Length: 372
Ligand code: NAD
Ligand code: DAU
Image (cartoon, rainbow, N blue to C red; front, side):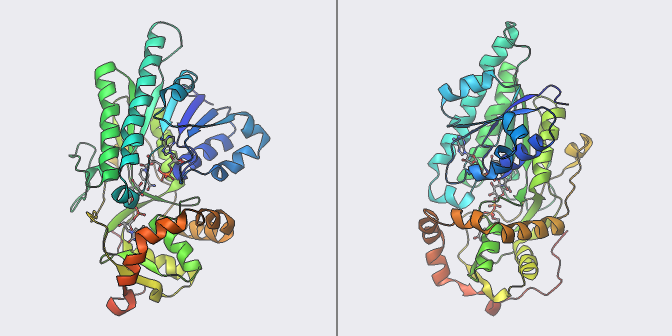
């Protein structure tokens, strides 16, 4: 049953969460057709969509277009052929936004504007009877727009206080999207997801970086005291929640997508080393990320009220993720080649040279749980 949204344009669909969204929907074989528009930046990877392109039935309902969401000429015909646009496209790594912010603004602000302008033209076409209905745009945003939440859980009407170039660009993108709902009556919904993990996660991020480094017995660069807290959400649950909001969300509304599993980073690292059978002595405390948000935490009652429940507990997801990285070494070795070394050197060489072996600072007690 494809319902209202039989033809989807998924932007950023070759990345981590977007590719999961595409794989999961096409694997249901319900007739939905998906076009992915992806620039294939360093984070985009067509190998993430191999299960689709290697399956004849799914491949017939799938099209891949390499291009930039900030390019209006590319976006216009794709928007005109879509019932809905789901925008995952973004530069997504906070550390890279601190090194080089500009690409974050181009994709996160101008790119979103181009998608919205295309939707506006399509809404006008619908009003003139040239298409059956205006497209819906779902803007995938992040819990980082709330900034560091020292106490309690941010609900959707909490103030936005982004503190990195990444999160500031994400806040700008979603505010622009909501302004198009208010000003032009566009059908826009926004999701704010928490820290996502799982198979196909780019190895620049904490969990896959530490898994792949540990598999190679390399040092694990833990920023600052390692007591920053994140709320972990399995990728299949994030993708599922986005689809649930696409189909059921109210136009103009924002929905938090929490994982409901808040953990200090040190505890995440302890758990993954335990699963991998690797020693805590691999951990090095290194210079902190500038402006590092101490804690993210969201209230998920609005999404629960829409009928969504996460399915994958953190420990199950972590085991599946570690197993996947063990079984898919060629996938991550290919990413950790080429430009990877230059990035790693820039981000970590000095930090690791001046870091302190964590074993000499503190060692988390086995079995200690930082979960709330
Ligand atoms: P990712 O970096 O793995 O993938 C991003 C994808 O977007 C890549 O395929 C990349 O090639 C593509 N892209 C980048 N710029 C583009 C452009 N200008 N035009 C077309 N394609 C472009 O990111 P992810 O982790 O999958 O995150 C997806 C979305 O979810 C992002 O919007 C991110 O802000 C948001 N989000 C991520 C998390 C998380 O923990 N990963 C949590 C909450 C929200
Ligand atoms: O909260 C949602 C956000 O989660 C998304 O919007 C972002 O796209 C996504 O990248 C992620 O952002 P974080 O900055 O929280 O994720 P990252 O994996 O980079 O870092 C997680 C925590 O681990 C954070 O406190 C920083 C710390 N860290 C990270 C790296 C890469 C380290 O201690 N060492 C590291 O080398």
